[in-house]
Image 1: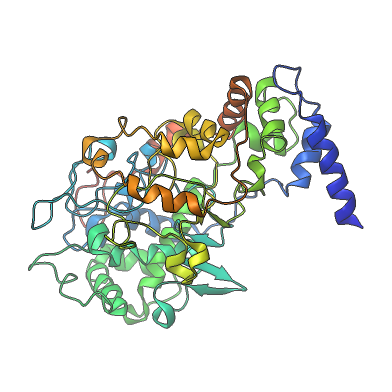
Image 2 (image 1 turned 45 degrees about the horizontal axis):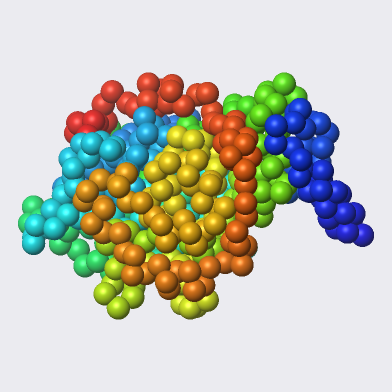
Length: 441
């Protein structure tokens, strides 16, 4: 009976939102009813351990975690770049520079080494149940599922910590190649040996040993595993990047003046007739489910398709062809700062990203790659478009929005942005790290 009443209220809300564009601000009570119907509640900042945060901060910015000591977690998730890298597709181990200016490394055949998927932001991830675009790291009923299978380290705190275990094992992302790189000598499938090798490096450094012992009630050096490092990295990410001071957060906390009239109209559209909240629901603005939203394929792909240059997304995890081209709904906090957007990073303009939902088929068929760097323009895979559209999600029919409605939705998305973003680099980036390696890229 409660569900029926809620849906009845929601239907009423939808009908009230048809004429919002250009009108006076939507009544706050109506907005709060819409938020409740979509499961949107204020987020809370979880408690964190100061010593674990200090260890995690050092690890996050220290290139000691990479095989050739030339890249850190922060290279692809930098506080100056809204915890991402500002690139459509990343330039990993062996690259040079930071953000859009980073130079792609070359392989033995002089081809650029391009990371196949966009580096997502790390905002407000404490309550997430999955990580990566395809959800290959998940928590289900308190149990972690990951590419490591039964070899996953015990004692990991959350999916953020599980996620932190994997970039360090990837040759293209952090582990690298080379004769003088002891981590590169380990077989790709021997994840336990890679993690153990990293701990050998870390614990050989007296400063790191002290940080581990301060963060955990363990004094025996042999008791530490990479799970302790990963948990600390996750603790730092939660402490630093659970930002809850956006106008949207303040409105959720009860301040009716936190958002202006256009932002409120955009929120009514978002949760109403524009149907954005069909997928971007809940306090995280993501249902953490997987959809084929008709996104252009670019980059090297993930080894799928006839030529290996396609990316089948969620199917890689489940093995189910019905999950082909499906990717997890991205959360939207600070979305105005976290572009380029989508799993392949092919959309470089947020307003155009919203407008494409007017007609997904037309948007992908008429995709303009000219804003991309030349090195990525050459990788746009138009041959895959027909296949992508063949299984387009049923939620993606033409959904006409007027220019004014799009402007209002953009205003609402702006209200999801934390005013603290400009302070993150000064607040988060350490002057030095225990290894003595350069912090800057």
